[in-house]
Length: 290
Image (cartoon, rainbow, N blue to C red; front, top):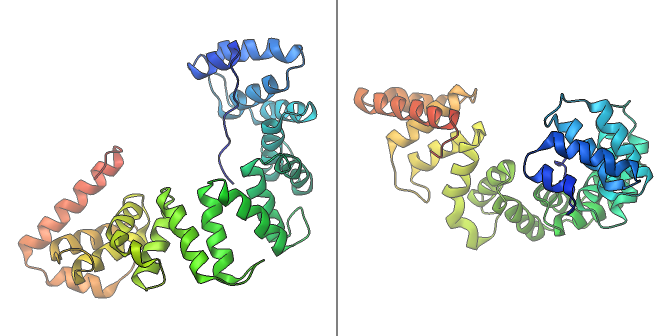
């Protein structure tokens, strides 16, 4: 499920929230809620749901979202649906979640459309309906949701709810990758390697694979090893290939061919690869760009 979109507004409660003054925001939102302001309940729900300045309390979060939904706030409606879909702070109820997602989706809420599409796709909370699933996920993708773009590519690829269309699949996977979605970056880089992507994007193979690898996808890390071993869109570099193989192996990815390659390297090159693999892990651990 996608992450929640922050509530918006220009009153004191929202200003305090934006400045990180969460207790003040909670107090002011509580006062506004007593006056019947729907968005105030949504803001309180977020504060409790994320534990901002107060202990995290999913039950209080849901109660506030439910009240916001009752009063007609669309973001609160979506957030209440999300809590019901996940059973967070309330008993899981996919049918009621679907009703709330549908209510929010009718207003053009992108995340609600996406989540509703997923429920139609799975037949969970809604009768299984691939065509409806495609329509809602397509809408969310057009609104810029990376996960929806990724899923839409798969729907085009498999012909689920629409006619199979490899070109459309490639286009939407490319868009999701451009937004930095790790799975999309990896899958699209693989598609490009296989000749199933957009020709103009083939130069992006090393960049996409590297970004996915840096974000912890073992398959991408192992593919990086092959890129450098075979010189695919990069200069051949056995040490760099060995580095990436060691990284992938540490993350549980098996590949005897590459392990044999690493074992046959001269000792100095193997040690250099090990040092660079450790340095990569250290940079990732502290959140630095490798």
